[in-house]
Amino acid sequence: MNAVSIEAVHAAVDAGRDVVTRTPVVPSVTLSEMLGGPIALKAENLQRTGAFKIRGAMNKLASLGDAVTRGVTAGSAGNHAQAIAFAAHHRGVPCEIFVPRGASISKIESCRAFGAAVHEIGSTITEALAAAQARAEATGMAFCHPFDDAAVIAGQGTLGLELVEDVDDLACVIVPLGGGGLSSGTAIAVKSQRPEVRVIAVQAAACAPFLGARPADGPVVTLADGIAVKHPGAITRPLVERWVDDVVAVDEDTIADAMVLLMERAKLYVEGAGAVGVAALMSGVATPATRGTTCVVLSGGNVDLGVVPGLIRRHETHAGRRLTVFVKIDDRPGGLARLLAIFAEVGANLLEVQHVREGLDLHVRETGVRASFEVRGRDQAKAAIAAAHAAGYDVHQE
Image (cartoon, rainbow, N blue to C red):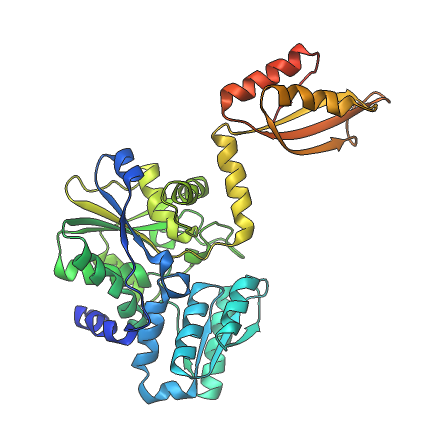
Protein backbone atom coordinates (compact mmCIF):
# COMPACT_ATOMS: atom_id res chain seq x y z
CA MET A 1 0.00 0.00 0.00
CA ASN A 2 1.28 3.48 -0.85
CA ALA A 3 2.61 5.52 2.05
CA VAL A 4 1.91 8.70 0.07
CA SER A 5 -1.15 9.40 -2.08
CA ILE A 6 -1.85 12.03 -4.72
CA GLU A 7 -4.49 13.42 -2.35
CA ALA A 8 -1.79 13.97 0.29
CA VAL A 9 0.31 15.83 -2.26
CA HIS A 10 -2.61 18.10 -3.19
CA ALA A 11 -3.26 18.77 0.51
CA ALA A 12 0.39 19.78 0.97
CA VAL A 13 -0.13 22.76 -1.34
CA ASP A 14 -2.08 24.56 1.37
CA ALA A 15 0.65 23.90 3.94
CA GLY A 16 3.15 25.80 1.84
CA ARG A 17 0.88 28.58 0.67
CA ASP A 18 2.37 32.09 1.06
CA VAL A 19 5.82 30.58 1.69
CA VAL A 20 6.61 28.12 -1.10
CA THR A 21 7.40 29.87 -4.36
CA ARG A 22 5.97 28.56 -7.62
CA THR A 23 9.33 28.46 -9.37
CA PRO A 24 9.55 29.10 -13.11
CA VAL A 25 9.96 26.52 -15.85
CA VAL A 26 12.58 27.98 -18.18
CA PRO A 27 13.14 26.72 -21.75
CA SER A 28 16.80 25.92 -22.41
CA VAL A 29 17.79 26.88 -25.95
CA THR A 30 21.31 25.53 -25.44
CA LEU A 31 20.23 22.08 -24.29
CA SER A 32 17.38 21.92 -26.79
CA GLU A 33 19.78 22.57 -29.68
CA MET A 34 22.36 20.18 -28.23
CA LEU A 35 19.89 17.32 -27.82
CA GLY A 36 17.49 17.95 -30.69
CA GLY A 37 14.28 18.36 -28.69
CA PRO A 38 12.56 20.76 -26.29
CA ILE A 39 14.31 20.84 -22.88
CA ALA A 40 13.00 22.95 -20.00
CA LEU A 41 14.48 23.65 -16.58
CA LYS A 42 12.43 23.73 -13.37
CA ALA A 43 14.39 26.43 -11.51
CA GLU A 44 13.95 25.26 -7.93
CA ASN A 45 17.30 26.89 -7.19
CA LEU A 46 15.21 30.09 -7.00
CA GLN A 47 13.04 28.62 -4.23
CA ARG A 48 12.87 30.01 -0.66
CA THR A 49 16.05 28.95 1.22
CA GLY A 50 17.58 28.12 -2.16
CA ALA A 51 16.20 24.60 -2.62
CA PHE A 52 13.09 22.43 -2.89
CA LYS A 53 13.35 21.34 0.75
CA ILE A 54 11.07 24.11 2.03
CA ARG A 55 8.13 22.29 0.40
CA GLY A 56 8.55 19.22 2.61
CA ALA A 57 9.49 21.24 5.68
CA MET A 58 6.33 23.33 5.60
CA ASN A 59 4.13 20.27 5.15
CA LYS A 60 5.90 18.34 7.91
CA LEU A 61 5.34 21.12 10.44
CA ALA A 62 1.71 21.48 9.35
CA SER A 63 1.19 17.74 9.83
CA LEU A 64 2.21 17.99 13.50
CA GLY A 65 -0.87 19.97 14.50
CA ASP A 66 -0.71 21.41 18.01
CA ALA A 67 2.37 19.29 18.78
CA VAL A 68 4.45 21.67 16.67
CA THR A 69 4.42 24.19 19.56
CA ARG A 70 6.87 21.96 21.45
CA GLY A 71 9.41 22.59 18.70
CA VAL A 72 11.26 20.55 16.09
CA THR A 73 14.67 19.01 15.58
CA ALA A 74 16.54 18.02 12.42
CA GLY A 75 19.87 16.48 11.46
CA SER A 76 21.40 17.86 8.29
CA ALA A 77 24.45 19.62 6.92
CA GLY A 78 22.66 21.65 4.31
CA ASN A 79 19.36 22.38 2.60
CA HIS A 80 17.06 20.39 4.90
CA ALA A 81 18.47 22.17 7.95
CA GLN A 82 17.84 25.59 6.43
CA ALA A 83 14.34 24.63 5.35
CA ILE A 84 13.32 23.33 8.79
CA ALA A 85 14.84 26.38 10.48
CA PHE A 86 12.91 28.69 8.14
CA ALA A 87 9.64 26.77 8.58
CA ALA A 88 10.01 26.81 12.37
CA HIS A 89 10.73 30.54 12.30
CA HIS A 90 7.64 31.07 10.14
CA ARG A 91 5.50 29.11 12.62
CA GLY A 92 7.14 30.76 15.64
CA VAL A 93 8.26 27.50 17.26
CA PRO A 94 11.61 26.38 18.73
CA CYS A 95 14.06 24.61 16.44
CA GLU A 96 17.28 22.73 17.09
CA ILE A 97 19.54 21.68 14.22
CA PHE A 98 22.30 19.07 14.51
CA VAL A 99 25.12 19.18 11.97
CA PRO A 100 28.36 17.21 11.64
CA ARG A 101 31.55 19.03 12.57
CA GLY A 102 33.01 20.80 9.57
CA ALA A 103 29.62 21.58 8.01
CA SER A 104 29.37 24.67 5.81
CA ILE A 105 29.73 27.79 7.92
CA SER A 106 27.39 29.74 5.64
CA LYS A 107 24.63 27.16 6.07
CA ILE A 108 25.10 27.06 9.84
CA GLU A 109 24.85 30.85 9.97
CA SER A 110 21.74 30.74 7.80
CA CYS A 111 20.05 28.41 10.28
CA ARG A 112 21.03 30.64 13.17
CA ALA A 113 19.68 33.66 11.31
CA PHE A 114 16.28 31.95 11.33
CA GLY A 115 16.52 31.58 15.11
CA ALA A 116 17.53 27.92 15.27
CA ALA A 117 19.95 26.56 17.87
CA VAL A 118 22.71 24.74 15.99
CA HIS A 119 24.73 21.90 17.53
CA GLU A 120 27.85 20.52 15.87
CA ILE A 121 28.27 16.84 16.70
CA GLY A 122 30.06 13.86 15.20
CA SER A 123 31.63 13.69 11.76
CA THR A 124 28.80 12.25 9.65
CA ILE A 125 25.19 12.96 8.79
CA THR A 126 24.23 9.64 10.40
CA GLU A 127 25.55 10.88 13.75
CA ALA A 128 23.78 14.21 13.34
CA LEU A 129 20.48 12.46 12.57
CA ALA A 130 20.85 10.20 15.59
CA ALA A 131 21.55 13.17 17.85
CA ALA A 132 18.52 15.07 16.51
CA GLN A 133 16.28 12.07 17.05
CA ALA A 134 17.60 11.52 20.58
CA ARG A 135 17.02 15.18 21.41
CA ALA A 136 13.44 14.95 20.17
CA GLU A 137 12.75 11.86 22.26
CA ALA A 138 14.25 13.48 25.37
CA THR A 139 12.36 16.77 25.07
CA GLY A 140 9.07 15.96 23.36
CA MET A 141 10.07 17.96 20.29
CA ALA A 142 9.25 16.54 16.85
CA PHE A 143 12.05 14.98 14.83
CA CYS A 144 11.93 15.95 11.12
CA HIS A 145 13.64 13.40 8.90
CA PRO A 146 15.10 14.88 5.69
CA PHE A 147 13.40 12.38 3.36
CA ASP A 148 12.01 9.23 4.96
CA ASP A 149 8.74 10.77 6.11
CA ALA A 150 5.36 10.66 4.37
CA ALA A 151 4.57 14.33 5.08
CA VAL A 152 7.96 15.43 3.74
CA ILE A 153 7.53 13.33 0.59
CA ALA A 154 4.05 14.73 -0.03
CA GLY A 155 5.40 18.26 0.36
CA GLN A 156 8.17 17.65 -2.16
CA GLY A 157 5.54 16.23 -4.51
CA THR A 158 3.97 19.67 -4.92
CA LEU A 159 6.78 20.37 -7.38
CA GLY A 160 5.35 17.63 -9.58
CA LEU A 161 1.89 19.19 -9.47
CA GLU A 162 3.37 22.42 -10.81
CA LEU A 163 5.09 20.58 -13.66
CA VAL A 164 1.85 18.96 -14.79
CA GLU A 165 0.03 22.31 -14.66
CA ASP A 166 2.78 24.40 -16.26
CA VAL A 167 4.07 22.13 -19.05
CA ASP A 168 1.25 21.13 -21.38
CA ASP A 169 3.28 18.65 -23.42
CA LEU A 170 5.30 17.21 -20.52
CA ALA A 171 6.78 13.91 -21.64
CA CYS A 172 9.76 13.27 -19.37
CA VAL A 173 10.95 14.52 -15.96
CA ILE A 174 14.57 14.18 -14.86
CA VAL A 175 15.04 14.66 -11.14
CA PRO A 176 17.95 14.35 -8.66
CA LEU A 177 17.91 11.34 -6.34
CA GLY A 178 19.48 11.32 -2.90
CA GLY A 179 17.33 9.87 -0.13
CA GLY A 180 14.37 9.67 -2.49
CA GLY A 181 11.93 12.22 -1.05
CA LEU A 182 11.94 14.58 -4.04
CA SER A 183 12.09 11.92 -6.72
CA SER A 184 9.33 9.74 -5.26
CA GLY A 185 7.08 12.69 -4.39
CA THR A 186 7.50 14.20 -7.85
CA ALA A 187 6.90 10.86 -9.56
CA ILE A 188 3.72 10.23 -7.54
CA ALA A 189 2.38 13.70 -8.37
CA VAL A 190 3.19 13.44 -12.07
CA LYS A 191 2.37 9.81 -12.86
CA SER A 192 -0.85 9.74 -10.83
CA GLN A 193 -2.20 12.32 -13.29
CA ARG A 194 -0.10 11.61 -16.39
CA PRO A 195 1.01 7.95 -16.23
CA GLU A 196 2.60 8.15 -19.68
CA VAL A 197 5.19 10.69 -18.51
CA ARG A 198 8.59 9.09 -17.97
CA VAL A 199 10.42 9.90 -14.72
CA ILE A 200 14.20 9.42 -14.56
CA ALA A 201 16.08 9.84 -11.27
CA VAL A 202 19.78 10.71 -11.19
CA GLN A 203 22.37 9.84 -8.56
CA ALA A 204 26.00 10.85 -8.24
CA ALA A 205 28.22 7.89 -9.14
CA ALA A 206 30.21 8.56 -5.97
CA CYS A 207 27.16 7.60 -3.91
CA ALA A 208 24.56 5.54 -5.79
CA PRO A 209 22.88 3.07 -3.42
CA PHE A 210 19.70 2.87 -5.54
CA LEU A 211 21.89 1.31 -8.23
CA GLY A 212 23.32 -1.22 -5.81
CA ALA A 213 26.62 0.57 -5.18
CA ARG A 214 28.16 -0.20 -1.79
CA PRO A 215 28.55 3.05 0.18
CA ALA A 216 32.11 4.13 0.89
CA ASP A 217 33.38 4.30 4.44
CA GLY A 218 33.55 7.81 5.88
CA PRO A 219 32.33 11.03 4.26
CA VAL A 220 31.50 10.95 0.55
CA VAL A 221 33.56 13.39 -1.51
CA THR A 222 31.41 14.70 -4.36
CA LEU A 223 30.24 17.97 -5.90
CA ALA A 224 26.72 16.62 -5.37
CA ASP A 225 26.98 16.44 -1.58
CA GLY A 226 23.29 17.32 -1.27
CA ILE A 227 22.31 13.89 -2.63
CA ALA A 228 25.17 11.87 -1.14
CA VAL A 229 22.84 9.67 0.92
CA LYS A 230 24.34 6.26 1.63
CA HIS A 231 21.22 4.37 2.64
CA PRO A 232 17.76 4.74 1.01
CA GLY A 233 14.84 5.14 3.37
CA ALA A 234 12.41 2.43 4.40
CA ILE A 235 9.58 4.56 2.99
CA THR A 236 11.30 6.11 -0.02
CA ARG A 237 12.98 3.02 -1.45
CA PRO A 238 9.77 1.14 -2.33
CA LEU A 239 8.20 4.36 -3.60
CA VAL A 240 11.14 5.02 -5.93
CA GLU A 241 11.06 1.40 -7.11
CA ARG A 242 7.36 1.65 -7.91
CA TRP A 243 7.00 5.15 -9.35
CA VAL A 244 10.35 6.02 -10.96
CA ASP A 245 10.94 4.56 -14.41
CA ASP A 246 14.73 4.55 -14.40
CA VAL A 247 17.69 5.42 -12.16
CA VAL A 248 21.04 6.51 -13.64
CA ALA A 249 24.31 7.90 -12.28
CA VAL A 250 26.71 10.63 -13.40
CA ASP A 251 30.40 11.18 -12.63
CA GLU A 252 32.09 14.21 -11.09
CA ASP A 253 33.47 15.66 -14.33
CA THR A 254 30.02 15.69 -15.91
CA ILE A 255 28.49 17.32 -12.83
CA ALA A 256 31.15 20.04 -13.00
CA ASP A 257 30.46 20.58 -16.72
CA ALA A 258 26.73 20.86 -16.03
CA MET A 259 27.20 23.43 -13.26
CA VAL A 260 29.33 25.60 -15.52
CA LEU A 261 26.95 25.26 -18.49
CA LEU A 262 24.06 26.39 -16.31
CA MET A 263 26.06 29.40 -15.07
CA GLU A 264 27.46 30.35 -18.46
CA ARG A 265 24.50 29.69 -20.76
CA ALA A 266 21.35 29.65 -18.61
CA LYS A 267 22.59 32.25 -16.09
CA LEU A 268 21.43 29.95 -13.30
CA TYR A 269 23.50 29.30 -10.19
CA VAL A 270 22.93 25.62 -9.37
CA GLU A 271 24.63 23.38 -6.82
CA GLY A 272 26.12 20.03 -7.83
CA ALA A 273 23.17 18.01 -6.54
CA GLY A 274 20.81 20.24 -8.49
CA ALA A 275 22.79 19.92 -11.72
CA VAL A 276 22.87 16.11 -11.99
CA GLY A 277 19.84 16.02 -14.28
CA VAL A 278 21.55 18.28 -16.80
CA ALA A 279 24.71 16.19 -16.38
CA ALA A 280 22.72 13.06 -17.24
CA LEU A 281 21.52 14.59 -20.49
CA MET A 282 24.96 15.96 -21.39
CA SER A 283 26.63 12.59 -20.81
CA GLY A 284 23.94 10.58 -22.59
CA VAL A 285 23.03 8.33 -19.64
CA ALA A 286 19.54 9.84 -19.84
CA THR A 287 17.83 10.54 -23.13
CA PRO A 288 15.15 13.17 -23.69
CA ALA A 289 11.68 12.31 -24.92
CA THR A 290 11.33 11.93 -28.68
CA ARG A 291 8.05 13.88 -28.52
CA GLY A 292 7.03 16.54 -26.03
CA THR A 293 9.06 18.45 -23.48
CA THR A 294 11.69 16.98 -21.20
CA CYS A 295 11.86 18.93 -17.94
CA VAL A 296 14.97 18.83 -15.75
CA VAL A 297 14.54 19.68 -12.07
CA LEU A 298 17.29 21.99 -10.77
CA SER A 299 16.73 21.09 -7.14
CA GLY A 300 18.90 23.70 -5.42
CA GLY A 301 21.23 26.64 -5.75
CA ASN A 302 23.17 26.66 -2.47
CA VAL A 303 26.63 26.48 -4.01
CA ASP A 304 29.66 26.64 -1.75
CA LEU A 305 31.43 29.76 -3.02
CA GLY A 306 34.80 28.11 -2.50
CA VAL A 307 33.99 25.60 -5.23
CA VAL A 308 33.31 28.16 -7.96
CA PRO A 309 36.89 29.31 -8.75
CA GLY A 310 37.95 25.69 -9.23
CA LEU A 311 35.01 25.06 -11.57
CA ILE A 312 35.90 28.11 -13.65
CA ARG A 313 39.60 27.20 -13.83
CA ARG A 314 38.77 23.66 -14.89
CA HIS A 315 36.30 24.83 -17.53
CA GLU A 316 38.64 27.45 -18.99
CA THR A 317 41.48 24.94 -19.15
CA HIS A 318 39.35 22.34 -20.96
CA ALA A 319 38.03 25.03 -23.31
CA GLY A 320 41.58 26.11 -24.14
CA ARG A 321 41.14 29.53 -22.54
CA ARG A 322 43.72 29.05 -19.80
CA LEU A 323 47.39 28.27 -20.45
CA THR A 324 49.84 27.16 -17.74
CA VAL A 325 53.51 26.75 -18.60
CA PHE A 326 56.78 25.88 -16.85
CA VAL A 327 60.10 27.26 -18.05
CA LYS A 328 63.64 27.80 -16.73
CA ILE A 329 64.98 31.36 -16.99
CA ASP A 330 68.07 33.33 -15.95
CA ASP A 331 67.81 34.28 -12.29
CA ARG A 332 68.91 37.86 -12.98
CA PRO A 333 67.15 41.24 -12.96
CA GLY A 334 64.84 41.50 -15.98
CA GLY A 335 64.79 37.75 -16.67
CA LEU A 336 61.14 37.28 -15.79
CA ALA A 337 60.10 40.52 -17.49
CA ARG A 338 61.65 39.41 -20.78
CA LEU A 339 59.78 36.10 -20.69
CA LEU A 340 56.42 37.69 -19.86
CA ALA A 341 56.86 40.32 -22.58
CA ILE A 342 56.90 37.54 -25.19
CA PHE A 343 53.52 36.24 -24.01
CA ALA A 344 52.12 39.77 -23.77
CA GLU A 345 53.06 40.45 -27.40
CA VAL A 346 50.74 37.67 -28.60
CA GLY A 347 47.90 38.89 -26.34
CA ALA A 348 48.16 36.39 -23.47
CA ASN A 349 47.01 37.94 -20.19
CA LEU A 350 49.04 36.97 -17.11
CA LEU A 351 46.92 35.57 -14.26
CA GLU A 352 49.49 34.12 -11.89
CA VAL A 353 53.24 33.54 -11.72
CA GLN A 354 55.53 31.87 -9.21
CA HIS A 355 59.22 31.05 -8.92
CA VAL A 356 60.01 27.36 -8.38
CA ARG A 357 63.49 26.65 -7.06
CA GLU A 358 63.09 23.57 -4.86
CA GLY A 359 63.38 20.01 -6.15
CA LEU A 360 64.71 21.00 -9.58
CA ASP A 361 68.04 20.49 -11.33
CA LEU A 362 68.92 24.16 -11.81
CA HIS A 363 72.06 26.06 -12.60
CA VAL A 364 73.14 28.33 -9.77
CA ARG A 365 71.97 31.34 -11.82
CA GLU A 366 68.67 29.76 -12.96
CA THR A 367 65.16 29.66 -11.55
CA GLY A 368 62.06 27.80 -12.58
CA VAL A 369 58.93 29.78 -13.38
CA ARG A 370 55.35 28.51 -13.50
CA ALA A 371 52.94 31.00 -15.10
CA SER A 372 49.25 30.92 -15.96
CA PHE A 373 47.73 33.05 -18.72
CA GLU A 374 44.27 33.82 -19.98
CA VAL A 375 44.10 33.23 -23.75
CA ARG A 376 41.35 33.42 -26.34
CA GLY A 377 41.67 29.79 -27.36
CA ARG A 378 44.01 26.96 -28.26
CA ASP A 379 45.37 28.75 -31.34
CA GLN A 380 46.52 31.72 -29.27
CA ALA A 381 48.03 29.35 -26.70
CA LYS A 382 50.02 27.59 -29.43
CA ALA A 383 51.17 30.94 -30.82
CA ALA A 384 52.41 32.05 -27.39
CA ILE A 385 54.37 28.84 -26.85
CA ALA A 386 55.83 29.03 -30.36
CA ALA A 387 56.96 32.61 -29.77
CA ALA A 388 58.67 31.59 -26.52
CA HIS A 389 60.40 28.68 -28.25
CA ALA A 390 61.57 31.00 -31.02
CA ALA A 391 63.09 33.28 -28.41
CA GLY A 392 65.12 30.37 -27.04
CA TYR A 393 62.99 29.30 -24.06
CA ASP A 394 62.34 25.60 -23.38
CA VAL A 395 58.64 25.94 -22.50
CA HIS A 396 56.59 23.04 -21.18
CA GLN A 397 52.80 23.30 -21.16
CA GLU A 398 51.12 21.88 -18.04
